Length: 242
Image (cartoon, rainbow, N blue to C red; front, side, top):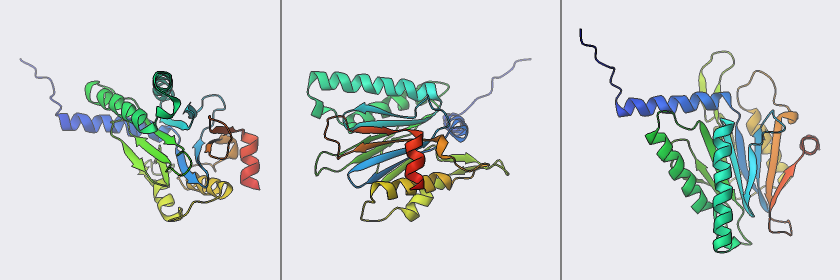
């Protein structure tokens, strides 16, 4: 008797790949990017003290990734190499987040469409504007594509409800859409507290601990080319309690 292999339509295959990514993100931890006066903060839920989710890419550009660590770490390293080569060949001011985000988008899109298994990640690329220039926040999903966010952005915003096992999406984004002030930027400490409340709004079985947070900012007040400043967990705890 002749056997026929099961046919999977392209549409169904895309759904399977998206489901794979969502399942991975539901096991990962979220990250919030938030503009504040004179800078951009990145706050991640991260129990690990050695596997960073937030990193510097170049002078005024930072990277954040969530999902499978090896997947977004490979992307981060590729981004650093791209930025270094462009800065060396042209000038440091020619290294822009938009071009880098486009490279990430192309890479993720090609992997998502051509490979059986996609990279199980979501990433953010943020750039501190020079002087009176605007800041930029770019969101790149696992399927490729490129979205420029305004004011704030969230990745890893998918959770498995601790009681019902149902996947909840965009919980943090909905919180920030209500709470993020329109038309003005908060001072740093107020912005940090807002980002912390946003992360804590997600369904979870235990409270969000300051010892499980990773914080870095692009600080426009720093008198140096490299604008990323990273905080220790003790500093984060003190900032949230003050």
